[in-house]
Image 1 (cartoon, rainbow, N blue to C red):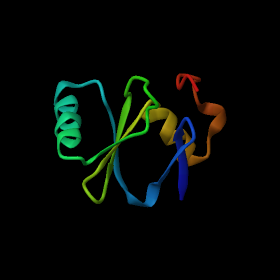
Image 2 (cartoon, rainbow, N blue to C red):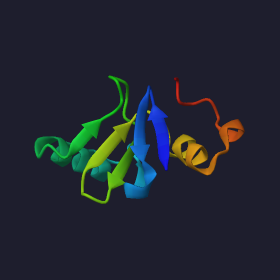
Image 3 (spheres, helix red, strand yellow):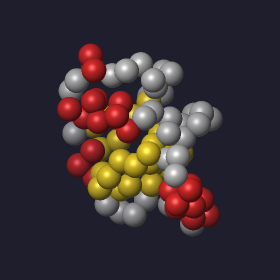
Image 4 (cartoon, rainbow, N blue to C red):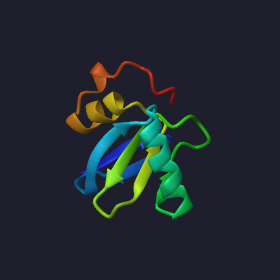
Length: 87
């Protein structure tokens, strides 16, 4: 299942292990390590990272959408999106 994670970027949700909110310090450290090891895919288009999609390959996809917004898109509930994705 392909899902738009913001700004025209699409991810195969069958390969996603988890979606994490990116505001905690340990997650920010994980993002930096992933960037340093070329395991981060930045899909924010220059915007603030709000969520991290951890892939089954160990890579991390950075998104400017909130985890709740991505979850609603996965579940097919576009009317419950709170308009916080600034898209």
